[in-house]
Length: 317
Image (cartoon, rainbow, N blue to C red):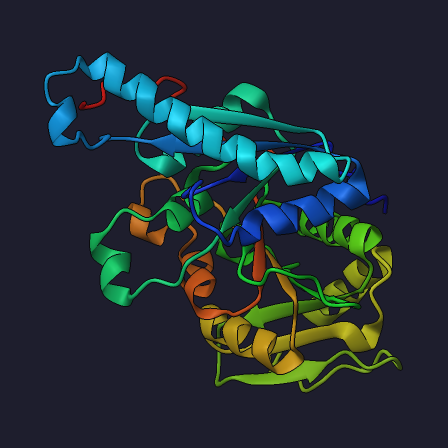
């Protein structure tokens, strides 16, 4: 199987252009250096605060002032990237919520990859607050690389969560897309790929496919499933001893396994299930994104369509 084509256009979602430490930009720059991709630094703002001296100014004037300030900050961030030979553009928009602004920019400019810094949030925030990470998981049509760590390991381990049984209504072909993306990463930055399949039945335990092709007990994972995993691994050059099967709650198993294996990047899919509450859309990915310490690359099925409108609603000044 061929790997995904090297990413040619990368959109970096910049939460705060004035912040000193920009780990998403640094990670995107490393990817762009290896792939030759062009970078766009993108920032969306809303509800600009007026100072006492600006209360009498027209709202449009305030918006232009804020947009210029944020753009100047982005240009400052872009300077060092350009010095390193990277092609960098800067975009600032007035839009809300931020994740929807990012999706609208994706629909407009069609990047191959979005890179965004991920922040850990409490369970309370999960239920009561709008969160850009989770909104991007649900709605962004192109792959999203959530950055937790600033640097790549010398030989990164790319753990890819697959489901060859197509359980949980996972569309056929998504596993192939996940592994092509994982292969693209290894071709850009080196490292190796491991695969994990989680069966939600039974207590948590891990088993490796053995190089001899023998399967573990049938009451853990059926031989048919193990054979499908082995075939998938062979198609993508993943060694049998790097193919892991597990039982338990998917989010808990993936979180624990990334820590135990010291994975540097977890590649996983996220799908929408029509007719269900948005709290169930990509809920495993949403739980994992807060729990793991490694980066997470979210890949959508090819036929995915976002619910975010191309044009924003009226915004308050």
